Length: 308
Image 1 (cartoon, helix red, strand yellow):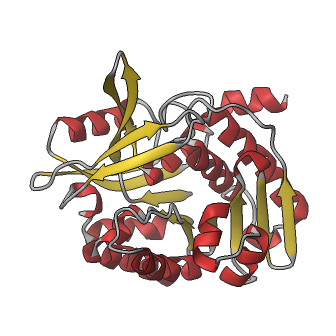
Image 2 (tube, one colour):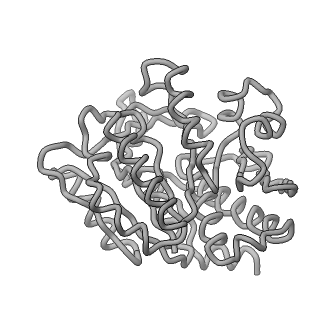
C-alpha cells in the first residue's frame, strides 16, 4: 500500500476571454494528484494533508470524499491558516506557469502524531512544496525518519521550484538531501540539468544518484527512462499536442507507484521496469488531453482499453 503526504491545494487555471483573464478552480497539489491517480488506477492508497477552514478547504475535502475511494484519508481542517492557492497560466504549447499564494498557509501544517500511520503502508510518497519552510522540512525529516524506522520505501518526486525560494542555490541545497535519501525517485530532464549542469540527462542522472536508487526520469515528448542498479531502460512515447500538461507528471508517477506496489521490489528486472514505463507513458499522455490535474488523471478502464 502507498501513503502520500503533503500539499493539497486549489489550482486556479487561467484562460483569457475577450481580454479578461478568467480562472477556473480545480483540486490540486502534486501528492494529492498522485494519490488520486493511484486510486483511479485501482491501487490501495492513503493521503495525509491539511487545508484551511475556508470555502476552498471545504471544497477540497468534499471533492476527495466524493471522487475517490481511498484506503485511508486524513485531511485536517486548519482553523488558523488559509488553504494554499496555485494560479496557473498555460501558454500556447500547453506548458504551465505558476504563482503560489501560500504565506503561512495550511499545506505543511501536519502534526507529527498524524505520521504514525506510516507503519501501516509500504511506500511513503512525500510532496516537495513543504520544503520551502523550516517547519515543513522538519515534517519531511520526521516522515523520512519513521520510514526508515518501519523499514518502508521512501518515494520523492522532485517537482523543483526556484520561484518560491530566495535563490536557486538555496533550493538546490534543500532538495538534494531528499533526492539522496529517496529509495524511489521521480525527476525530469530539466531538473537533472539544474542539479548537475549536464545537458545529457542520463549522464547527469548517473552523477546525481546512487546505483541502488530506483530512478524514473521523465523526458517529456521523448518518453521516459529508468535506472536501477545495473539496469537501464528507455521507452519512447507518441508525440501529441497537449491541451494542458498540469497533471502529466503526476499521472505518470501515479502509475509507476501503483505498479511498483504490486511487484516484489527485490525482483525488479528489465522486463518489469519496461512494462511500468510503457504504462506510465500512456498515463502521462492521456493526462495531457484534458484541463486540470485531477480531472485529467486516467482511470483504470481507460488504461486497460488502450492496451487491449
